[in-house]
Image (cartoon, rainbow over all chains, first blue to last red; front, side):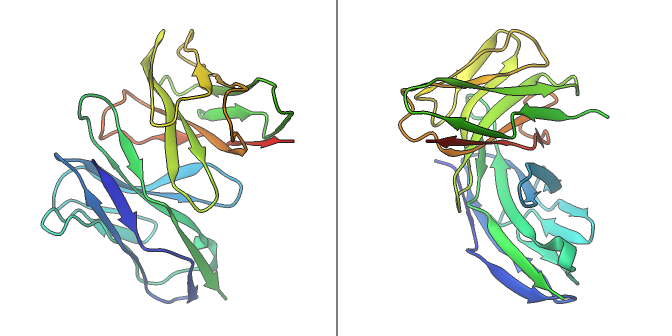
Length: 113
Length: 114
């Protein structure tokens, strides 16, 4: 079946450091890929998405490229801020006989000033 | 402002009681979803609905029930048959339920069984 694997946290970085959170997936067809972010005590909100191979999603300095050859969708940011501290979820969505979104376990990011 | 509201924010239940979690959206979205989130885990789908008066079970539907009588509303009932209901519950909606759609989430309800 479909699955999403993302790197375990927590990830702790200093302000202005480079961020990478790895995400790989398995899917039977051609899924759409998403990164969602969750701040403490809140619901999730979309950070970025890509709906086909080689697409790059970007938002608020974050980027991720849909790599079909490596089945990956790694999240990157060149310079993190304290306000980026949150939990990040990688997700895939595919219509295979019905709606299905699979979420990764989430990666908690702490950014120190 | 358009969005999704969930109530209550915190809910306490005694064992053996049914409780209903509210979810309302004013985004005019066709599809709505209920997820359960446990500490350190991703979201697991309980139920989803892509049209009024129709809904489908997700991966962990046992012990839960839903209704979709109005486009804006998708309440979730946690029944006494759910053996471990303490969790954070998230409601979401999307425009049409397509795989390319973004899901919009409510702020969640934290349910604790006493």
